[in-house]
Image (cartoon, rainbow, N blue to C red; front, side, top):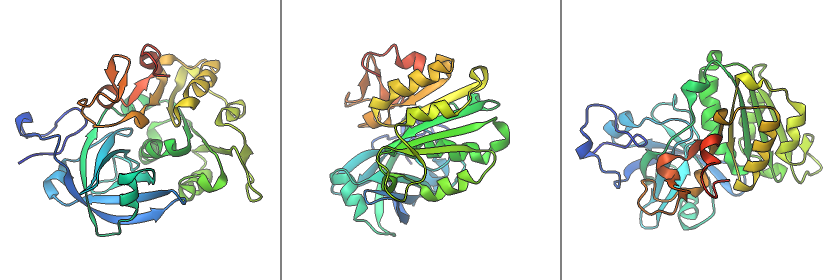
Length: 292
C-alpha cells in the first residue's frame, strides 16, 4: 500500500517505489476552534491507522489540505511533532478552499498530503537560547516550534517570543499566550499596530520590541515567520544584536503551492521553497535572488 510522505524523505521499511505523493489521505475533523473572525484552528486525525502511525514531521513543515470537490491548499502545521495522532492547522478564510474548509463541521472528512519541505533545525537549537519572531498568521508555524521546545524545555536556554499583529482582535492563540506569559521560562512580548481601548500591551511594529530584549549572540538561534515585508527589518535587528547569519532561520511558507516542486510557482532564486525550504537560514536566503 502507499505510505504517507515525510517531508522529502520516506522513513520506515516501506520501499520508495510504493510512495504516491499525489494521493491525499482521508482525515476526519475532530475539533474546530474559532481564533478570530477570519482564522480557525482545525484538529485533524488521519483515518488510516498505518498512515497515521507513519505521519512524522518537523516544526516548520506543511501539508496540502484537500476539500474534495473544491481543491487543495498548502497549510503549515501548527501542532508540535510530539503530539501524536492529531494534526493542528490554523487556517485563514482567504479563498475557495479555505472558505469551504471554514464551512465544515466536526466529523467531516478532508484530505491530507505530506508533510512536505524542510523545517526548523530543532536538534541544532538544543542547548542554546532561542529568539522567535512572528507577525500575523506567521505565528501558526512558529507555534509548532514553540510547543516542541515547550515539550523539551530542559534542553534549551532562554526562550524569547516576539509577536506582532495589526489589531488586538487579530492576535492568534490568545489562550496559549496567556499560558506562556505566566511561565518563568518563556519571555513573551506582544505588540499591535492599531490598539483599541482594551489593549494594555505594546504598540508599534514588532521590531520595536528588540530594544527591550537582551541577546547572547554567541548562543542564540533565531526563527522568523510572518509577512515577507517584515523579514528584512527583523533580520536587521537580529544582526544589530550580532547574531550569526547561519543561526537566523526564516520561513517562506507563504510561497507554497503544489508541495513537491512540480508547478514551479514557489521558486526562490534557483531553488524551490517547497522542496529546499520552506525554512532557510539567512546565509542561504540572502544568496537567493528576490528571497528577501
